[in-house]
Amino acid sequence: MTVVVVRPAPACYALVDSLNQAGIKALPAPLLSFSAGADLPTLRDTLTTLPNGSVVVAVSPRAVEYAQLHLNEHHTQWRSDLHFVAVGEKTASVWRELSNIDAMQPPSEDSEGMLSLPVFSKTTSLSVLILRGNGGRALLGDTLIQSGAKVRYFEAYQRHWNADDLSSLAKQWRADGVDTFVVTSGEQLSLLCQTISECDQQWLRECHILVPSKRIYNQAIGLGFSAINCVNSASNDSLLRALYEMNNSGHSDDRQE
Image (spheres, rainbow, N blue to C red):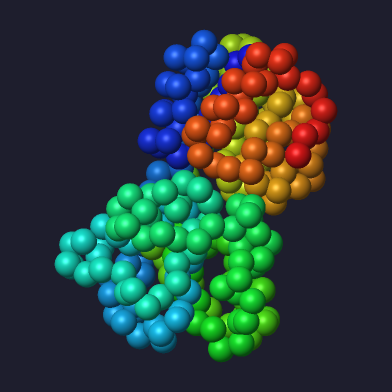
């Protein structure tokens, strides 16, 4: 097995190092970098105006990190009368580590799992602040709005795509015998498929792919992949365990949920 890890740095390099130490050849492909979001200077005022019992949702560890950095710089803490929801184990872990916030987690790392949480059982007039990057995860907010919630999207960070060398990288990956990809977001998966040549796209779809959620799993099916593992987590530990098991079992080419 030779793995390409498509996720932002530094988590990309950390997983690659862990895989190589476990005897699994792995190559990094950090297609994204980040900077502070346009809304970040207004975070303190935005939190102040939220009604008691409002819900703050963080869609990624990056959203928490940038929000927390801003609050620290202004000697401000998260309000104790708010509910906090993290999309995924890693996001919850980062929130707990940085600010001792014990955020609720959905049973699955997608919008459907989020909406199953009890805090969203009565959404009429519920105020929800969604901390996210520039664009992304509109389904959750749109569904909440349709059910009567008052939703505000808050750009805590910005994504910057680094895909200029993808076409040449794909050729190198083929030469290196790459047969497995880890892709941690739908946007990265789309970029990967759209940027490389038509010939390389066919090769890519024949590779095994690991994804962190049912949403990206379905997207991968739509893009023509047939050997897909949904890990149900974007944490490096979960991805490492899944890859280790695949490597030791001589992973099959069947779709797996």
